Each structure stands twice: as structure tokens, then as C-alpha cells.
Length: 187
Ligand SMILES: [Zn+2]
Image (tube, rainbow, N blue to C red):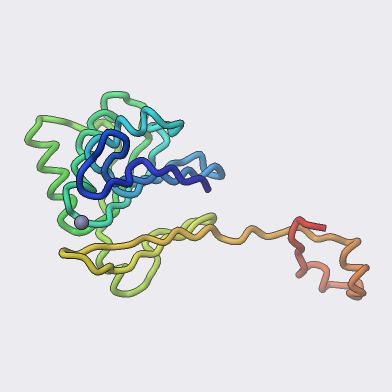
């Protein structure tokens, strides 16, 4: 995993720092996940080594403008570029309305699959917001002036490979138990 801080300037941009956004590059999936998308995040992406076409998930922490005003513009640009495979957006339940309204009223049609996932239930029940064979994402409520959510991304453990030499060194008797043992890749 590789993290790029695209914006760390809280509510107002400065000459050298933009408003909130963070990109998580998952090399094992060739995907980028974005966390928040303040205004100007597109420019920050252009200046970075992140490929916008690899953005597959966007997680929004809360509905304050410095976290979401860049999202309609980014989606519109990705739509124009025509190379997005689809984006899943996770956030508060009113996010879908905000994005749909911005796109509809600016006569913008997104050419790739766009899905919205409300996060409130996952936060309340402490259940996984997302899970596949490599990753899992949980979310939890945060204290703020409006409903806000934090996200935790876990990379799942990768099974190791059986190491005969190590098994012998540890005096593990030969037999069916060998089939149940894996070792981490270090010696
Ligand atoms: Zn806020």
C-alpha cells in the first residue's frame, strides 16, 4: 500500500496545500482508492504519480464542502476521458443526492458505472463495508459538527508456503500435519 496526501489544508486551500484528499495505491490490485475529494483534487492528481483511471473506490468522510466539492468535477473528467472501469462511492446517505443533483443540473452524463454505498449501517453494526480476498474496509462514526465517518483499510494476511527444511529443523513429525502448515516467506 502506498499513501499520497493530495490535500492536508483542512477547510481552505493555500498556495502550497490543497483541501482534503488522500489517495491509497494498492499495487496488488492496480487500483487507487481515494479518501475525500476537496475542490482542486484533480490538479493534485495531475501533479502526482497517481493514475486517475485507476481510481475504483472513493470514500467520503463527511459532507463538508472541503471534502466533497471536487467530486462532481473529478467524475465528469473521468467520464470525458473514457478510461474509467467504474467507481464505487462510499459515504453518508445524502452524498448520492448531492452528486446526482450536481451532475444532473450541469447536464453531465457519466459514461461509466457509478455506484453509491451508504455507510451508516456499517458504522452502526461494525460490519465490513467492503471485503474481497485481499482487503477489508470498516468504518466508524467520528465526532464532528455533522455526521462523519472514519475508514480503516486492512490488508488480509497472505498465506505462506510450506518450508520442508524449516519443518525438519523444528522437529515437526512428517505426516498429514505438513498439509496444514505454512510458513512466512522469511527463512
Ligand atoms: Zn468538516
